[in-house]
Image (tube, rainbow, N blue to C red; front, top):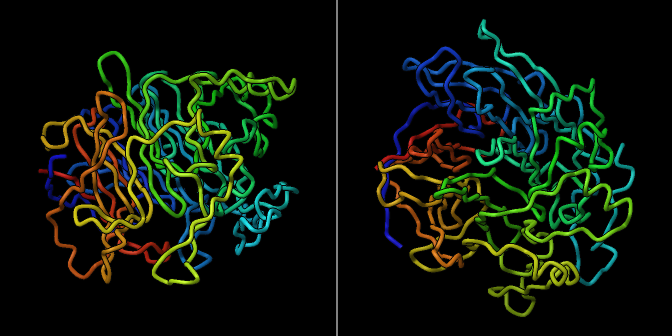
Length: 469
């Protein structure tokens, strides 16, 4: 693939974790603005040569960084309604203050292929054994410029601190629905196998029909679809399952259809980017009825990414040091049944990159943090491609550096390689974790969120760049 070199143009600096980067046109305005949502609960926008506060919900966000400073909770999703300019509606996904629980399993939990009791534990006592509660809300920007919460769409109880999704709310230009990408609930290896259970909300891509004005005061806190009131069930369809943790969904128009791009964050071995065109969404009411009747569900065309049986193109394995040679690794397949059951139905990745890769023109990754389609002409080498970011290259010590790369859909639809994008920017002695990737409404510009530390408690170390030729 063509080698591409870009520059980074700083837009704003000295902000907290820039988690979500979106653009929108404010009602009554004439210019598209860049909005920046931070993990701790601030939303800014760039306007008139400066940065302005759009909304600050920090008091409503769960206290972050209690265990070592790193956290995957907080303000996770921001999406503007396609008619935001006219109706002022926007949507938030965040971890709610005051909902901290003890967690569903001991923090030291790890599945052991030699001990079957560790492979299929059950999430019991869900009302008391959980980590926190996430909420998805609809807000409205009033004519006086003041945002106000309008209603709650979902309240989700989460078993662990991590894998809550990030950039988790995006509107589909194909269906007009709000798309929520949920992680598998966290820990490692999806211990409760929530991602493959059709009734579990965790580990899915869900479409929400926000045109149905379902107002339910204080919707129940749930973990499963069947726990939702019927009016809420009727607004939801499941687009895909087998999700470990996702960094949002990107839509790229191709003639008369849209290609969808998503990235599934890996476990021990590989990070994977998927693409698909046609898909079958299944209404939650249909899933519920099949569950009640214990009947077989027609899943032809339904997207399954394969987790937890598969990590990208590979059966999920435990990786540990080789006892006879410390330079080698032993890999033990963990979930034989899941790997076999999903091997034929799962979607193959468009491309993957490994956590260890010694090739000089590749990199060893840590975690996928952004996937965005790009159709602009400002960076000709990237036109028509999908760009992705990794948090931190394994080979970038002592100063941490993230990675930027791209790939393309092949005409035959088969897996493709990727190419590292060279970056002309001097971060000096500062670490640079690549924590988010964004684009504008017509996908002709790309924005990169960079942080100097992954500790939430290390404030004001974030910078947002535009990626330019």
